[in-house]
Image 1 (tube, helix red, strand yellow):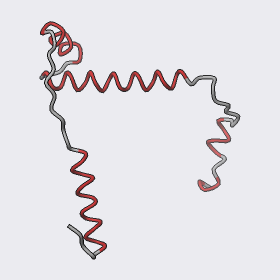
Image 2 (cartoon, one colour):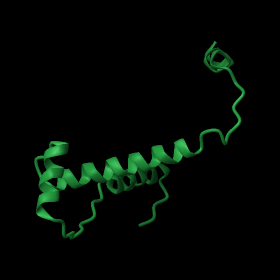
Image 3 (cartoon, helix red, strand yellow):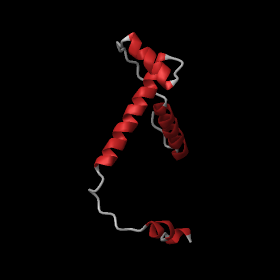
Length: 92
């Protein structure tokens, strides 16, 4: 659907972005029951879905942290902390 009204287009874009954030995917996964039970206990999940979502989020976070740690010493950074805190003229 196309419209000429700019405000209407903005409204449509906001709705699309909002609806994309709530899109869920279904997956069928075969897991050993004892592994799933232990996972639910460790993360304090009330459901299998909650346990798996928590585990996936944790794994993603851990891998991102590992990538950042792997970059240690590879970037040259010469600014001092005080310069960064107080050097931005926009902040007055």
